Image (cartoon, rainbow over all chains, first blue to last red; front, side):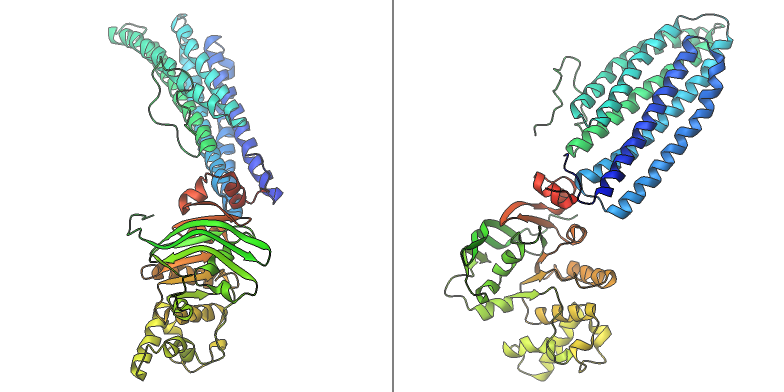
Length: 237
Length: 258
């Protein structure tokens, strides 16, 4: 609903929370992209920056929580307003986690980069990361525009990520099990892939929150099968 | 929230219309109110919620030029039928108003007044018992038991409102109507009344008009939203305040320009 509150400062409070989420989202995207970039381009020099920058995400999430508590205490929000605030808090927590995963990817990339062999796994990891980056971008767009349909598209795409991850996982596990010299680096690839897959999961949580904020209920827990027509998760409103 | 209890319909309104002269204040309201629940009537000033409340004990009858149409039934009996004794009806359906209005009499006599005129207490000891029980139920006994002969108007605002509740329940009603009972009270006195309402609904059906969305959300099991003489939405309170079905309801409870 676009109607404005009679008390206009309430609208400003809500807009401020939205902006904080947008900022957090931008930072999380940037950190994630930078970590993948460092891995793909074997760029060790950017890793230190990624690690220190994570503190900014943590701080911004704390600030958002404080602000949300103030707004709840002073405005006693109802219905959509209440859901907007709750969603902002939950999405912020997710984005903070995305930042943690990005930091972990960066740290592990450092080990991989220091190893001389150029591994094809970088390409496989990059492919998953590409999809997840797209999902994260669109989930944040869906949040910014309160677009539940777009959010559900993101939600469905996580299946693709899961499939790619499962395949890469078994490849890497094979190498590790062989006990070859590559096992150590493979284990770092495995964790990086897992981190990316987790970012995908967290991104679906953002999508769910967008859906909740718009519709007042969570999407039904069954994710549609791969062949289901898009729009199958629409509410019968 | 427990919604599973009896769920017996106590008050049934069908196509209730109210005219004040030419002006129509209610446009055919259909509404069922459950026994032993608190129902909150909300809506902007002039929406008809207080008018509807006053239909339940025929208080509108005393307003010149006011005409009520349709039926209001309590326990399946139409209270607008000729057979109904209005004085008796108002004993069954008690009312508490926005401003505490104790009689300029002693605390004791305020509560004893109704039982006396309705001949409910043949002896002094029976009357004493009714006064004590009513004051206890209204959560006021401990504060006034040593000064029952003091004037009702000497009490604080919150105490006066509880005295009015004791007065209303002294005649053993089925239903208690409350028209913004806390709007003149501070937050502590308000909390005491709200706690009391939760107690009282075990024995009574309560209908409250309130302008405080927070209060409606806190105390009622069901909420009805009125707008311009129509019932816009009626449902479980938690649903109305978390995810109302109607856009007008949402705008009103959120403080938006609807």
